[in-house]
Length: 218
Image 1: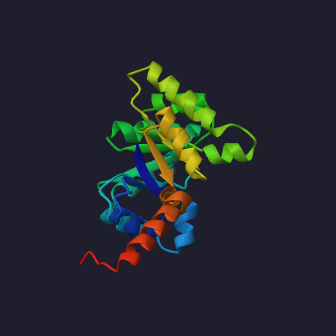
Image 2 (image 1 turned 60 degrees about the vertical axis):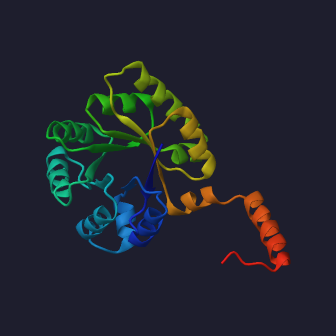
Image 3 (image 1 turned 120 degrees about the vertical axis):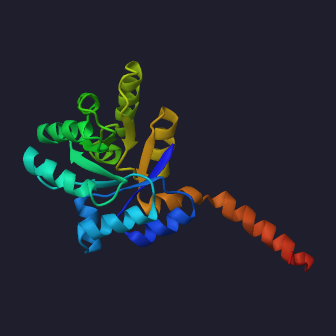
């Protein structure tokens, strides 16, 4: 499974890249706004940090402007993936950009049929939002299971399932078990994956025992 980092904070991306935990990055207008910087500058810097796909999202709602924004964003760097919403205009834009050879991430997916439409439009990635469904007392992981099953039924569909709105490590474990291709995680959740109380307790015991010996490895 590939790990994408869901943030526009360059320092977090750089630190996680040093751990080998960054296969790509996803951003959106909200994340860019939090950075307080110009979108093109942020995307360019992120693309310099990681050679993997970097999702940069359009902000327009109509097809013509969306397409123009997508073409502008893809020219920022060779590893930009244009991110479009799962609307009629977004699907039209996805189809055109895909035909032009541009990778596209179709975002804000909340149903299996939406995911099927995105795949037929040629999306490189589909981004179902599991956490937001859970917030509405719906089963976000069931959506992942449904999409994975549908895509497997039709080998000619090459769209990758990119699980988004991941809130905690359990979401990631479930998505991996279901066979999702990619998970995009906030930096805090990636760091949560490392932590376990038994690891900490075991390390404390090992360290205490070693100190009693009075030895040093170096």
